[in-house]
Amino acid sequence: MSSYNRANATFGSLAAAMGIIVGILLVMAIVVAGGREEHIPSVDYSIDAANLRDTADYTTYAPGDGLPEGWVPTSSRLTTDDPVSWTLGFATPADRHAELSMSDADPDAFIAETTKGESAGTTDVDGASWERFERASQSDRKPRRALVKREDDATIIVVGSAGFDELETLAGSLEPQS
Image (cartoon, rainbow, N blue to C red; front, side):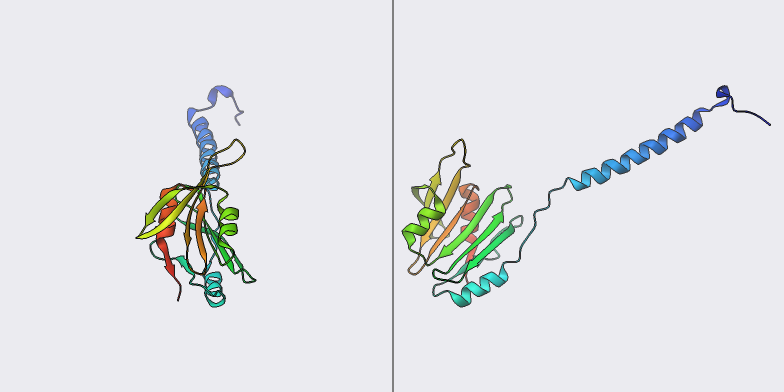
């Protein structure tokens, strides 16, 4: 019968114990790191797009295949009362926000309410002229940019904190709904 003596403790026992502890810490680190990945919830806006197309008395548009990977639709709000309007929100690949808004409301009021900015010239997107609007960054507000296209019966606005390049990408992806 032998009794435990500290002098008889081996390095192997110590290494095994440390290995178990390091293994547990690695598993915990992997679990915690995996939980930090941002997940942006996506919405299916196809029903709102179809309802808008069936309800509106104007040509409606929705993003088509021209919208590159990385754009995540995050919200969709459809109003079928008078005026008929739709707002579709996106998280952009640059982690900014962009919205598509269209309505048959009074154009000047709709533009002022949606853009919250001043006219800043025009830009050409796939052969169509869009008016640029911009609100300068203020201490309590983020910069806001917009592209506006007036049609005969409706106004289309692409707006958000995204840069004009991303807003032009969204505007260029719009396809008329039949």
